[in-house]
Image (tube, rainbow, N blue to C red; front, side, top):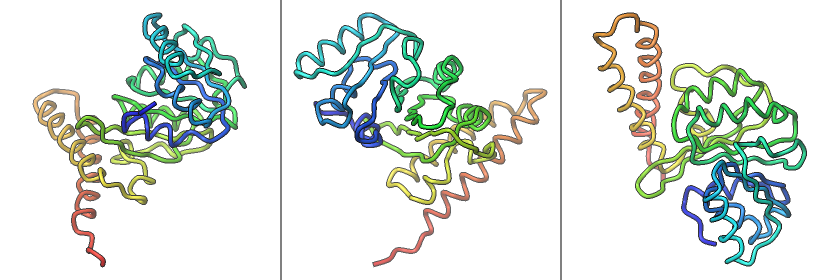
Length: 233
């Protein structure tokens, strides 16, 4: 099984020996790869729709892979606590991820690892994780088909509610650096500038404008820090 760069990044974050649930598995490439490479002894693949779930079954059959339980379910509704210790939610909006988490409060217990790849609403997701007893440990970036994706490693724990640019970029990403970081920061800055222009004439948007302005200032500073780093030989 050959994975896209986005899924390859996610697969690399799954602990060896863990029991994984891939939520919204689509074609099932991730759990098939994890079983094929003996990274996981067991995996659950869930999907809201029957057709992609059947497609994932065919993917496993074609690869000759066993040890995957395919379940037609909305999020984690068909998964019991302690059946798994690692949960992947990739390729869905931040609001969808938050809805799934709200229906599975058992994930707040210690011992669970979440690997989240939101397609949207990253700031809202960061806020809700901090307020829900979760801690973002690491943020990663992957470039796939000309688009940048962000992946969060999350566990139970205390985390301060992020403010400004930290609602978009976790400190681990800044500290570790990444070949895609500058492009990622630039893309967010462009979106914030467009959003601010759209709010210029709107009444009652002072708080939102202040929020975006602070985030933009932080992100622009971090962009400048990257661009002016001395080159070492």
